[in-house]
Image 1 (cartoon, one colour):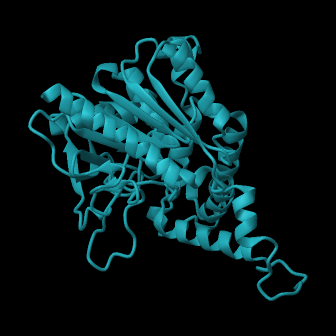
Image 2 (cartoon, rainbow, N blue to C red; image 1 turned 180 degrees about the horizontal axis):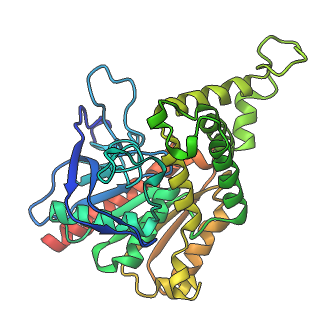
Amino acid sequence: MNPPASVGIVTPQTIAFEQPFALQNGDTLPRFDLITETYGTLNADKSNAILICHALSGTHHVAGRHHPDDKHPGWWDNMVGPNKPVDTNRFFVVGLNNLGGCAGSSGPLSTNPATGKPYGSDFPMVTVKDWVRSQAMLADHFGIKQWAAVMGGSLGGMQALQWTIDFPERVRHALVIASAPKLSTQNIAFNDVARQAILTDPDFHEGHYASRQAVPRRGLKIARMMGHITYLAEDGLGKKFGRQMRSGELQYGYGIEFEVESYLRYQGDKFADRFDANTYLLMTKALDYFDPAADFGHNLHTALLGVQAKFFVASFSSDWRFAPERSHELVKALISAEKDVQYIEIESSHGHDAFLMEDEPYLKAVRTYIDNIHKELAHESA
């Protein structure tokens, strides 16, 4: 087997949908754009397509680079590419930035046709169900009647699960990684604290900061710092930083004294430079609202009875934000509904971020599952 390689230089494509789109909350977008990247080649019967759904701060840029000097490959470049677990020699892979995003799809930064100004906080609230419906329209654009797989980590895994419930005949396999059938109370609480940091920033201006040439950097930075702590594990964080001090001695002040403080402030600043505060608010609310069992008497078993997809579910031992127990809930419900499911729990010190990391057992498990999808498709076309 050849060593894994990058998909190379990739060019995003913006797809316009020039029709009204009714949202779950009752609002309607008059039109919308979705920015996408695709990797690999769609086969003749369009059966080899895999949809990658992103997590809270993800984008359409899943793999490859945008130019030769690009220092930052796509956020799942270790997963998607030639001879990688999601092998683009075999599959046509689609990544997109969800509605409400800030990387090129219609969202708070887009121009509101009613005012000619950026939507800002006037962009309507979106849900995972809305995203899945817009993704179904994207599939229609490509002529894809059924995805070979829909996959994602965290909020991306939630979308994969919602796909199997809302469009059961259009998903063959769902890979739900480091995710949950709904948020815990603690997770909702974390999200609210993060939002309050943004909403109370003096530069927020009720979400219309763009028209005031302002950015609520402090709030967004604090939200990211707090969120980032929850994505990491105490074990991994302790091994990386411990109680190491920058100067080697106490300064008796409120500046940066511990290395972990420097790391978190750097992460917060970097995030505030690239992400939109209104989008952060929308994405965390979509997380909070996600509860696919709600339409089925809050019974997950019942919600899964109509599912046709086979499942791959993965969790990580040190992930306390989306703990393995949450994946167990989904697996048990799938088994009780007599659905096909494979489950792996990976020992890891990386916390919730483990689904993005180089972890050999994890990547090998995904590779094996995706390889079996390829064999399944090849057998059916033989």
